[in-house]
Image (cartoon, rainbow, N blue to C red; front, side, top):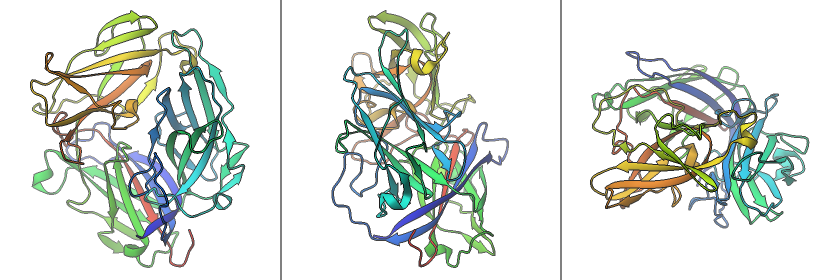
Length: 438
């Protein structure tokens, strides 16, 4: 199996070009990955945070840890992308709701383009101590739920990355690397190429009403690419969801100093629908999409208004934050430590149980599809129901349907698909010059 591994060179964002005034809120975040090596990497054993192919995943394995976020400092809704020589670090935050007060340690694993661990040693991609403690913790203040709020800046005085590329942040308990509590992906970039991109109505008629086409051109006058079909690889993700990307695109056309990716079908995404949302900032008065609030010691319980399938409906424009959430609380001075934990109770009214599973999807469930995000069907209520313990704030979410005996999620079954939907696209461009090690 050929594995790309290497360096990540630039990050920028720009508004999407729109046809017929579509893409209400859409933008394209461009990330370029350069200098890859093709090598063979054996998978010796499968970790709990890796799949059958050895690809390392973002996972929260200890469910007493909540609100795990990794973002650029000052921009909590950003993608976890940091420049190799930049002055804006990444920030990791999370809350520990247990009473154990363990010591949390962390390591960084350099990864190939397909998110399998590379065969580089830590000395080759890190400077400093490879294993470090997360020391910055603050107890919650004036909350019904007590927790410790942890914060870590990356890079820091203990460690910094010396190579650009894909990384996995591994956090574990009490100095035991086998006791992993969560993992987060991030990327380190350098500015070497430019990408011009647009999302628009697809060219093919069968996709025009439901989908979006992402075309882009890689401008690489600063680097030499002799054979783009063997040296490069491109991946596109929608709304930062790692599990639903378009992988391994090759250039459609090659011109001097530029690679053009202008397909009619290979780069088409289902448009989906605007994310649903609710607001738990105020524990006294129900606000957006909250039906009632009760207090059952020690938690506030937010009963959300019943949801229904959007699939048969026409597109309705609504601003959203593309599946993310923002931690906020009324009257808060520092929501990191004085926002409380509350239960949100979801209800999706559907007359008959579907042949498959329904999941609550979004950053609020860490985009994980497991027992914590899977809804249960209540025959008596004729509804799918689920309760989640969440920190106060504003949340986006959607319902994803996984048909029985199928590995592909169906967005349209409950949410519908519309070309007008505002989405964000993350483009990863990989390049491996011949004869290089990384």
